[in-house]
Length: 240
Image (cartoon, rainbow, N blue to C red; front, side, top):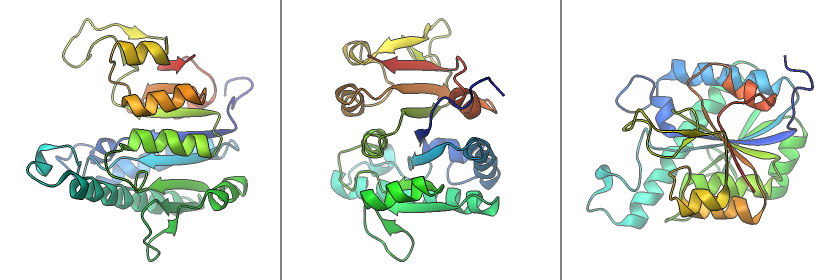
């Protein structure tokens, strides 16, 4: 373990729904969810307080071809419900390995999860429970990236961690351009002015307004969550 590890006391981890697909064309591959739960537990056992926001793109995305011709508001609400499915799956995987977890939803559905209540969420974190925030912001036209930033600010997280399928932030899309250059560090303003597809502009602006640092890193490399928490040079830091 890195000396002085962990370097963060409270973090908000943003996971894309696509990560949950594994090798499937869509839906959930539970062995992937189980492996992710083990990595989260490793950090949790260090004493780090963890909040999590998960996207729903593996099931339904409001701004996708699946939603073509559909009312945008209805499609976005369907996407929010997809995030609840993913959140319950991760909660099950975490609790199976002994990590006490609570799911709070921005859209009230008491039969499956708690409603989002700021004070209660803070109390859960302080008592050593992982809190998964589902349902986005509870409003259409806002992404789960914005929801993650909002919850990170509300929970007074030390840092926002965005787990992706690429190594960090690049000047162009590394999937389409093999010569794309990765940044080790970049400012919020540069992300916005260069229109880099890190998170949507609302999320980046919210990070900037609240001086919330962001690290974008590759989740597909095992152990990267721990490495980030221990302050190793992984991914790209977005900050002032």
